[in-house]
Amino acid sequence: MVPAPTVGGPGAYVFYSDPRAVFDLHEPTLRSIGEPRYLGQDPGLPQLFYQAHLDVFLTALSSLLHATALVTAAGVPAADFLPGVLNTLTDIPTMIGDGRDLARRLEAGEHPGDLGTARMMGATANHIVWTSEKAGIDPRLPKTVKAHYDQAIAAGRDTENWTVLYEMLKAGD
Picture 1 (cartoon, one colour):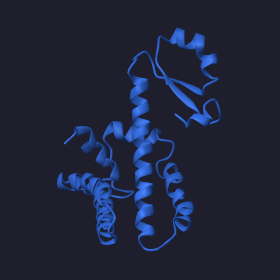
Picture 2: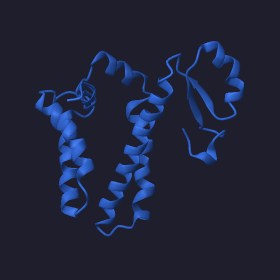
Picture 3: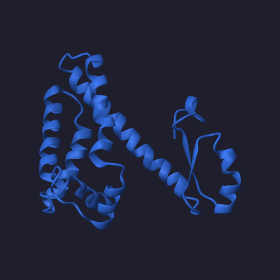
Picture 4: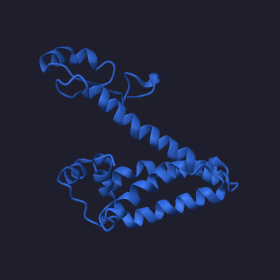
């Protein structure tokens, strides 16, 4: 789960599934590639985790480029924007913690409206769509994000936390 030049280095990791005894036997060798992350015996889980990680990665890259296009359309050089906006990506863990509490709340269906309601985030998404259109920037990415919030709002879940989108997404509606 890293670019080729960093395989075997710090931050590299690989997902595995196999009978635990087989994994344990080969784990020291597997470490030379990257941190081995054992997912159990289901042979499909490593590929699923890989795809899910790339889902986050590709979406983040697209949003980074969309935001850069939005700013450069106003005549701001990308070099004046990109170094600062990267904090937005790196501050996500500050917002959601290490993921354990978020996972617990998602699994329990708990979406308290205390840190950014679907209505508030939906309004923000609407502003980004509007700004993109006014700047002549492709609005499809922010329109997709806005559609998720619109769905939660239409379902009467607008006063719940932004995490309520999880319920919409997993329902596949």
